[in-house]
Length: 244
Image (cartoon, rainbow, N blue to C red; front, side, top):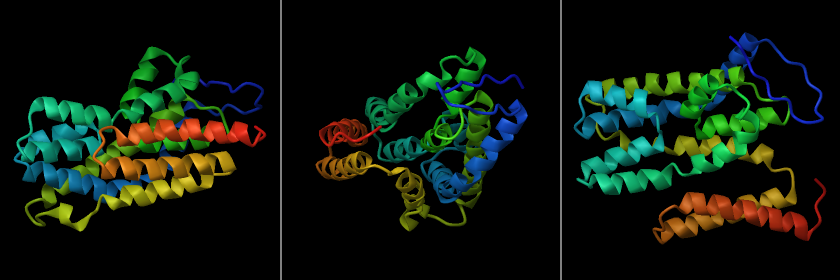
């Protein structure tokens, strides 16, 4: 496997072999895959309960691979929403990927196109969080990102399949609120990354903003809160003249 390591400026490092990086990415993603268990089961179950066939349900997870967007799509389909409504809703739900792409662009821009395409397809909230944590210690490599993303992709499809098979056995899985697991997982990711006052202020701003905007049913609450939190964090950093 030909790997393209992106060297962070003025950062000494040791480049591991491509396969070592690949398996390292898979290994590091395993703890985050715990959130996929209830999340994937719920998605698979909802697909069947929404009227999709087994083949369509499997294809949705294999091809779409969109997590929360899948759940929203299935809910809208069940309620008889129009295609336009579904497209607009999914656009806002997945719009944080624009931020992810812009953030990672500095590190993946020099990868060959056949590497960037799978990384783009496999990019999830979990892969983004893992790549940010990894990049603070070592330079990101395409093998690492693909390995981590593929691990999450396989787990998602495995537990989606289990949910599809369980749909007829345990109806109304959504009533068990299994989707809360994704929130619990991200708390464990975000908290260790808060090491500065400005970052803490940005996180608090995003949290409060997202709750308020969601309460008033503002479309794009997550993306608006995320961008607002970043600007607020920069503002606080400059206000208190926080060292880099």
